[in-house]
Length: 171
Image (cartoon, rainbow, N blue to C red; front, side, top):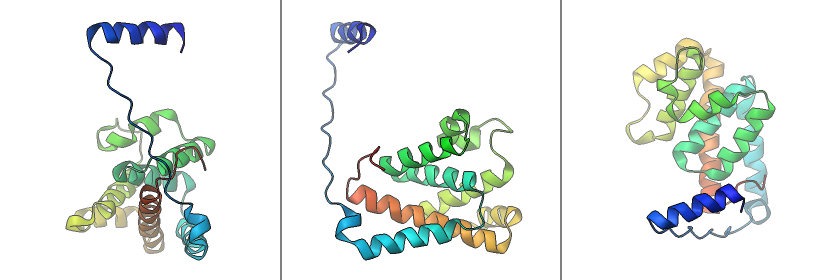
């Protein structure tokens, strides 16, 4: 612990007891090793879903979906991939609140994709006509099909990685 961290920790304990650290849950299984045919099929599906779409847009959709699903592994991996692809910290930091982000942070096309991703992820009420029409106004039919494919693929990856407790940073 650094001196500042020690000082801050001491100050916290003087005011109130520090909350116990949450135990780190161990990974449950190595999905790629135990279900290799399904894992390879998912890799192929993921690659097919991305075809023809802007890689930066794909990363934004995957990060936002992973946030909604609570998948730390995928969020960590896609944030790193987005940075490697040139994504800015501002856009990554504002992603959880993208509808409130200042004009110009996200394009209207990106906003349409993010709205669609959220409704596909929170499928309870289906995808509204308004959100679908907004996406259809910004994406050609083939691109829209690809975008929907990216949405359901990242949702599947999130569910695999949450269920198996895949550890962030191990990509």
